[in-house]
Length: 151
Image 1 (tube, rainbow, N blue to C red):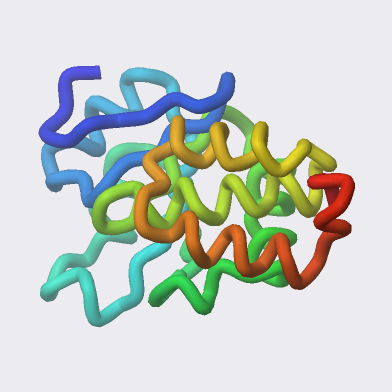
Image 2 (image 1 turned 135 degrees about the vertical axis):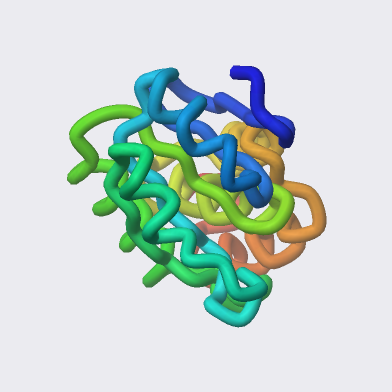
């Protein structure tokens, strides 16, 4: 995809990225993406009407605000899994840099899909996770059997 930001494709039908520019939406739609999940808070969008931009490009627009690492939790991982399951085609998750998107994908993979911790963390890194890895590991320590390294 020829867009203004790096785009990760950690799994078929799932893309993650930082904040797309307004002109990127048409490219995403032409590439087959049907749903955009904005993981940024309303205060992060600096006056943009992203919902209007995305829907004008012909895609469905959803919000799952993840303000910081504390919102990378089991409840939001379950919400993300449901959004992905309900999507009718490829999904783009975005935040500011793909860090939160990758972190929540990693937690979802471990908690909701049963991936081993190492595999889930690698999945998150492939989706853009960086500094949120500490929050993911803390959530895994809270919710999972550490001896087995699996939830």
